[in-house]
Structures are given as structure tokens and as C-alpha cells.
Amino acid sequence: MSERYCQGCGARIQSTDPGSFGFVPEHVLEQDTVRCQRCHRISHYGRDEIGPVDASDSFESIRAGVDWSTGVCLVVDLLDFEAGLPPELLGLMRGKDVLLVVNKVDLIPDKTPLSELESWVRSRLDYYGLPRMQQVLVSAANGLGFPALADMVASLGKQVLFVGITNVGKSSVLQRLLRMRIGGGKRKQIEPTISPYPGTTVNVSRWSCPGGLVLADSPGFVPGGRISDMLLPALAQKVIPHKSLSSHLYEVRAGDIVYIKGLCAVECISASGTGLLLGFTGSGVRWQRSSSKHLDKWLEKGNKLAPIKQWEEHAVRLEPGQDLFVSGLGWVSARRAQYKLRLYIPAGAEYTVRPNLIGPKKK
Ligand SMILES: Nc1nc2c(ncn2[C@@H]2O[C@H](COP(=O)(O)OP(=O)(O)OP(=O)(O)O)[C@@H](O)[C@H]2O)c(=O)[nH]1
Ligand SMILES: [Mg+2]
Image 1 (cartoon, helix red, strand yellow):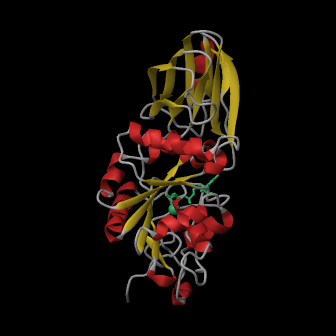
Image 2: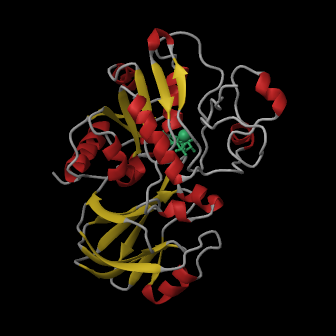
Image 3: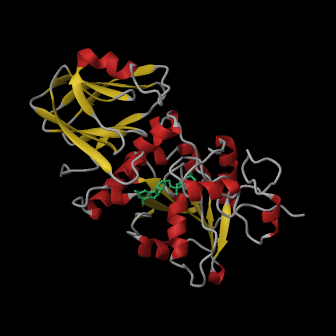
């Protein structure tokens, strides 16, 4: 009998091990299209008892998917933009037509103009020395940008693959496109499986649309250095912005810290004047302010859901209009003053200083 694959996550179907990807009870095997038990449970109860997918398996699936494709939609999360462009993943796409799909734009406050976000994205690509590519800003949550995306996908040939790091919304973007009946015709019954936990899609899964277009989902590339990947799922879900961003403004002087309990602290060593730090993160956690004499308490007495073993310190200079961005966690943005800061993050976490994403831009 030929191999069969779950339409929701791409896992190879099997009916021997309920604890592994692709399990379905035997009587379901008789159906034409199948969805595995894990996808069923994720979709109905929001629980993933088996994932995430193994990083090296997903890399091989992405490689095979890119080889098969005529063009690629590289999906990135605007709020974790820097993490979304790992060189190993970009290397797989060399020579392909790539459309950059910048997702989760709904999480940015309405008053930020789209044109400003577009130039911000362009300047970040330039900063990383990446070639100019077609780009489109979208929200799989509210449909923003999808008419333009549908037109651009049509220019990528007949076999289009959605790729990107885990949890950026590849399956969500594809699901919305399929619901638009791109290429016309009836909607497929089984859709790509979506979940708030990274590592949901297991293998390449394809949807044939009328007119010969085939759209394919792929597993996420597992990036290094994201704090959200170091946490137990219950806390990771709070840290990753889903419905809204939280932002808090603090007047910060030498000797103050702003921190997220058990995950990160930013100590002010000196400031050039009365400055403000604006802290952004997912709405399930928040930046707070305290004195640096309580630093150890807020780091070490951390959080049971954050098994951090070792901390690293970094000296950082932040100009007004710059963000200190910590991958998979959030950022603080300087206003009015120049800051000399000391950043405390879990060992292995990545950070960067960048022009501010939200708020007035330097001309
Ligand atoms: N606010 C917001 N959330 C989104 C958007 N797109 C996706 N999400 C959420 O992001 C999370 C991950 O979405 P998925 O579509 O499963 O992401 P993925 O890239 O396919 O993830 P993997 O299969 O794990 O690699 C889910 O909680 C989605 O609801 C968006 O445009 N806005
Ligand atoms: Mg997915």
C-alpha cells in the first residue's frame, strides 16, 4: 500500500503508535483524505501532546520542498523579524524566486502607517546585506494585504512553497489563501493545522487549486537564540504576542532596572538626561521597573516555567529612536536620552540594537 500523509501537518500516516506523529485509528484509514489524531486534538482542544517536530527532520523536509517548488513565500513575523532570516534557511532558497511575506501586522498599533513599516523592513534587509526581494505586509488574523498577496503568489509559478521559522504563521497565511479560493473552485475540507506552539507542521503538505496551481505548507525552521523556545509551553504562549502587544513607558535613571521576571533585565548604567524606556512584549507578561539592588531577586527567583540555568551580561548603548530587541521576548525602545545599559539574558539568547519599529522615526 502506498504511503499516506496527514493533510493538516504533513506527517506520514500510521496506526501503530498513538504517541508519534501521524497516528490515526485503523477505521479512519478507509477515508480518502485523513487528518491525524494530533491535528484533530490541536484543532479541537488546543492541545499538542506530541510536538514539536525535530529540527533536523524539518530541515530535510524544507530542503526537499524548496527543490520541488517553482517559487517560495518566505513568511516572517514582523514582531520577531530578525529571527526570521537565519542564513541556513536563506541558503536553501538561493536561485529561487522569493516573496517576503511579513505577517502579524495586526499587532502593530493602528497609528503606524504601513508605508513606514515597509521602509523599516527594507532598511533591515539592507542592513543584513540581503538582496532586495518583493515584499508584502499581511495579517493572517484579519486578512490585511491578502488581495495583493494572492496576486503576487500567482507570479511564483505553479508550485509555491510557504517557508519560514517556526510559529511565524505559515500555515495561517496558507489557510487564509485557501479560504479565498485562490485559483477559483471549491475549498478543501482539511486545512493546514495551526497552533500557538512552535513546531506544529511536520512535513510538506500540498493543496491543489484549479488552474494547476499547487500551494504547499512546510515545517518551520528551528532558529537558535529565541527566548520563547527556552520556556515551557504554558509560559511560551504568554510571551509570544498573539492577540495584542503590551507596552509600558518608564522614566529610567542610573541605578534603575526594567525587567521581565525570570527572563530578562535591562540595567541603566547612565543616561544623558531624563529619558524614557518604552517596553514592548506579548500581553501575557510585562516589563516592570525596580532598583538594580533587586536585580538578583528578579532574575534568580524567576519563574518555574522558565528553566534558565545560566545568565549572560552584555554592555549596550542605546540612542533615542533605537530598540534593544531580545529575540523571542520583546524589546525596549529609548526616547529622549542616550543610554548606557547592561543587558541580562539567558545564555544563548540573541539580541540586537535596531532603528525603532514603533513610534516616530528619525528622518
Ligand atoms: N496576531 C496574529 N497571530 C497570528 C497571525 N498569523 C498567525 N498567528 C498566530 O501565530 C501562531 C502560529 O501560527 P501557525 O500558522 O501555526 O504558524 P506556523 O509558522 O505554521 O508554525 P509551525 O508549523 O510551528 O512552524 C498561532 O497562534 C496563530 O494564531 C497574524 O497575522 N496575527
Ligand atoms: Mg505550520
